Image 1 (cartoon, rainbow, N blue to C red):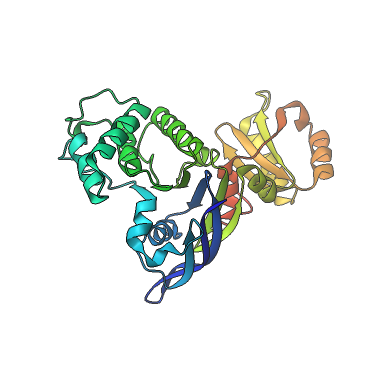
Image 2: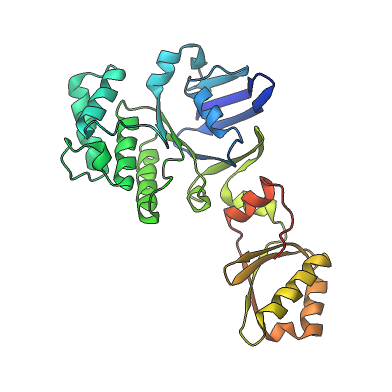
Length: 314
């Protein structure tokens, strides 16, 4: 069942095209990732979907109905959490949540039930009279999520929700996202962390206002790297500069279509396997490096499909 459908959406600011004729749908209960470099059009798209910007053209359907013509009804069905501004720092947690409930015209008893349930979901243990500015970054983001969920929306838009928080807090936040979708809600999320995007059911990749690919993370990896990826590591018996020189030669000769350093290792896509095996034997490099097949990361996919890069020099 579709929670959201976008058809031929475009947004222009004067002569600048921020979003260019994009179409996609999001299923109910899905975690849908929206990835792209800064300026790709992600936030503009979210603001249109939330009824904050009027599109230049295109249709938006929520629950199968064109709710975009009724912004008040639309906003009752969605929750929005921004990276930069969701809570007021100089107000307490209780004051923030109560103010949010009044914006949505919630019944006081429903507000109390929803507040208590959601604070329990994040295992909140501080006093609600605590000022937001005194919260650690990770906990502040969790309370921001509570505010976005307070009025029980069907779709929650999260715009880079974990920016600036620790890896442990990011992992906990994604546990909360999975709890939300397990309840049948739909999550539409943007992030710059490729490891987070691995948790999405599907991912749309944006470049210059257009969607260049949209699939599950596993299928995107196969699309970007049909030949697979090798991880190459110096075994320690050969000077590192010799290994690097050998790998650079493979790239220059077209044996690799991609070569990228990953710490002390390298990721490579071999498009001429016979020539690769012959080079390993003829140079004796087979005895000096460790090679294994790996699943490419979404970072590899992002660089290739969004940035349009087919080769990396080392």
